[in-house]
Length: 404
Ligand code: PLP
Image (cartoon, rainbow, N blue to C red):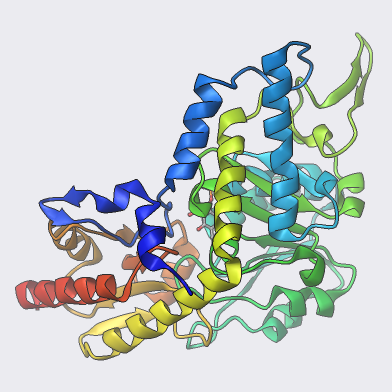
């Protein structure tokens, strides 16, 4: 049984009020709230266990190193990676994708080579590829969603040519909630590497990178109920061996002389400088918390919420939901034709203690495609309830009465 009351009680912020109303937190797509167990772990890491990691010979450095390094295996378990050595720890998806762009792609792409993307990518999975377009003449090949927001694997595969060097695709759109069948994409392209932006996907469903067989899978800690500034990217061992280091500095070297440098073994080769020690420790605890609840259970709970929300929204004939792909995640981008602007919706809902996000959601090519400069996005997490959907609908109805 999914004990929603217990789960909600684990997140202290959910019991606070905002503007004199109980908080209804529906901005999980931007960042999720934190369970007490994670907050406690961060406090403990700073108050009892803190020192810099690696290289230290004293008690606290060894303890911090053990805690920090222990997270690699938690992430490997969370993603079902074949080995923990294929997990690069970092500050989040943005860093992970930039690492692949600079370290793996840049040395092997030239004028006219192609990178296949979907229009539904977050800027984090667009701008690093634009760098390669600007600097190395790479062509970006865009795949558009179907009318209902679906992004079929066949459509992505149809965009692949002999010049395709990489497919960079989201697992789950942060605007449409569409889930992309990245396993079918990888199965269809064979040797062409597939990078998956798992920022949203890993939050809402179990992920098994071994089964998906993708080459890179990036996650970001703050959406996974962990600290901001934490994250990781899974890289297939063969790709790691092909990848040059993205950032240089301490920890990633074996030896440095005046004339030469040699590198540490992967994954350390890709982890320069003092990392987000405590953030990473917190991420490990957050992922353990999610796995304790069970990713299948979280996915099932959110699927019920998504179905309920879709049904309630369908009853509001003045409200447009962007994206109706079958099996979509509980992420709803809303617009009101000729009525309230997304920012007005967000401001009025805030007065009711309801937190949603309004804007372009760092997905301007998609917004352009949708012909909507901004949407109001309600994005659900493991602790949300159908009562909160009802509160949102009440708030939207109030907006409609005020703005038409
Ligand atoms: N990709 C997607 C789909 C996202 O939703 C986000 C965050 O909003 C990102 C990438 C960027 O993640 P981060 O800022 O943690 O690197």
